[in-house]
Amino acid sequence: MKYKILIIYYFSGTGNAKNAARWIIKQAEENGLTTRLINIDRFEDIEPPDLSRPTLIGFCSPTHGFNMPPIVIKFIMKFPRTRTTDVFILNTRGGLKLNRFFLPGLSGLAQIFPAIVLRMKGYRVVGMQPLDLPSNWLLLHPGLREKVIESIYSRCNRIVNEFALKILGGEKKYKALLSLPFDIAIIPISLAYYFFGRFFLAKTLIATDACNNCEKCIVQCPVRAITMINDRPFWSYNCESCMRCVNNCPQRAIETTQTYSAILILISSMVISPLLVRMLEYIGVWDLFNRSAFTQNIWTLINSLIFILFAIICYRGLHLLMRFRLVNRIITYTSFSKYRFWRRYKAPKS
Ligand SMILES: Cc1cc2nc3c(=O)[nH]c(=O)nc-3n(C[C@H](O)[C@H](O)[C@H](O)COP(=O)(O)O)c2cc1C
Image (cartoon, rainbow, N blue to C red; front, side, top):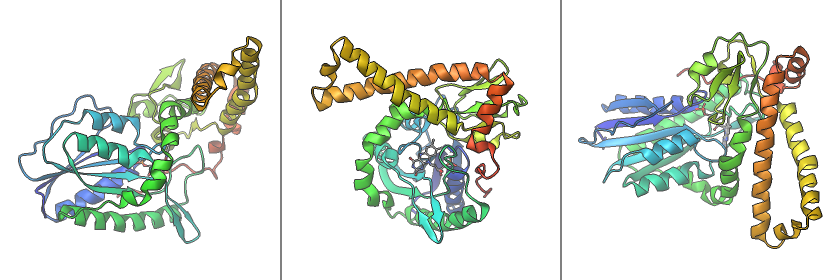
């Protein structure tokens, strides 16, 4: 093996990235390396790693909105500089399985951005590996069935072991670059999600009357995004929508409010935006936004900010109104996550 020490920093909402990190650690230990697995939940300071012996550093994280989650981006941005240390990046993505076919997720900026930052800090990126573990994006689809999860897991376990052996042995592996053209093409979506999308998603989670205030979601939240307001958990903008709270709630009391979210989007796009356009036309400034692609983009930006503001106000209102039984029932029964077929996602223990 080329290295004596392996240090992996990981962030994981529902366990996939943690499992992938553990597989690599296991391979390293079997090959005589000293290892450290470091969870970056709620990190404040970063202890500089001891690099006196040949060391490989890894970063494992889920992909959120075609990018690394903000907590991982912050961590990597604050990570100390070096001269010659080797690093690898592994992003778990939302993999699915249709009949016999494994469908990959999408990385977007999740590999390119940290690779550039680490390179600029002096690291040598020796591995870039995407990994299509089961998707946990419960707002969009139910958690996968156990059998599908098992099958995706055993495929990914093989991929990771092969990747680990190669990079630990000193080879370079850049599997992530295969989808580079596509990842570059979706950069605008990655940026839109990073600057706007995630703020809306933070305002789609709500605790129903099934909540017994056990505070497990508050204690376990990796970014301290949940606080108790009026005896009900409240999700702040720090939320990364990592899905840990939704999947681990012992009462299944946290819902993903699909219908409520769809209604917000409809009201915003079919009522608020057209009304604003009318108002701007009325005061004679609408043409200013219609002059070029640049001014149209400014309008899109303003529209997105107004949507986020609208979502904040509605979420505050919803959080207050949830104390009324009728509102509570409507929100509960119009959330797909209420129903058993909309399974929660549990990463297998490994
Ligand atoms: C809010 C959110 C956004 C996501 N965005 C993406 C994405 O852009 N591309 C992708 O392939 N998977 C995406 N996923 C799926 C997760 O990246 C994937 O399930 C990952 O393996 C979860 O890892 P974890 O269990 O360590 O949190 C997203 C999941 C969530 C909850």
